[in-house]
Image (cartoon, rainbow, N blue to C red; front, side, top):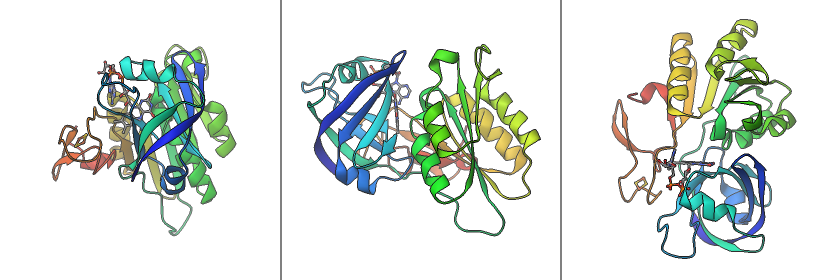
Length: 259
Ligand SMILES: Cc1cc2nc3c(=O)[nH]c(=O)nc-3n(C[C@H](O)[C@H](O)[C@H](O)COP(=O)(O)OP(=O)(O)OC[C@H]3O[C@@H](n4cnc5c(N)ncnc54)[C@H](O)[C@@H]3O)c2cc1C
Ligand code: FES
């Protein structure tokens, strides 16, 4: 991990309260794995004092983050201009585990709820690079809030969307879409599910995976302070005791968590 002053190459609003930022951070771009995150100092002053965690959304020569404005830090971030410099510490956390070579044809199902899409585009890109069949399910409240559909479609043709209000794609929660997809795309090979989104959604997907005996890796977006395992502020209860979301996570095997 490195603490760098990164130049902002782009900071663009891409939807209702959603922004994409590209940062000149070649070391992080070279070393980050899907599911890892960076701690970003949103403000030059002491307020807010703490850095904020953001998933590595995509990497090329730079890194991208995708964020939603929810409070002071993200509001300040959204007002940054191209050319401004910000403190970025990363890459942090463990990242997703990609399937190893195995008998048969493993398939990955990626499930994104709302801003939970942020860490999953890079994952979809890496899975398809490894020639792993990848299906993506995106859930959003309504049509205007669907994130990354085009980016996911660049990685895999199998992208399905659901909206709670039925304004686009299937109507209902993404867990309902998950059930539907499982019925129509049975696989005799191993299935690995990767999921990020609101807590209730993670739990619901984890339950379905447990019934089906699928491995399920969840990205937990706990509140964090230091981001490097020093403050113990992000403890998560697991079957093997308390773990730190920033250091042992943010990716956990759903079966390990005490929900
Ligand atoms: C590992 C990790 C990766 C993340 N990746 C992304 C990402 O890619 N894009 C993105 O938009 N957000 C992401 N988040 C959440 C992001 O860190 C928070 O939204 C951000 O810190 C809020 O800062 P703020 O100062 O704007 O809001 P604050 O003023 O701190 O809080 C405003 C509101 O947001 C809530 N909030 C704060 N932190 C979180 C959190 N971690 N999860 C859910 N709600 C929170 C608060 O309870 C409060 O209601 C991630 C969090 C973690 C732990
Ligand atoms: S945020 Fe400090 S230990 Fe995890």
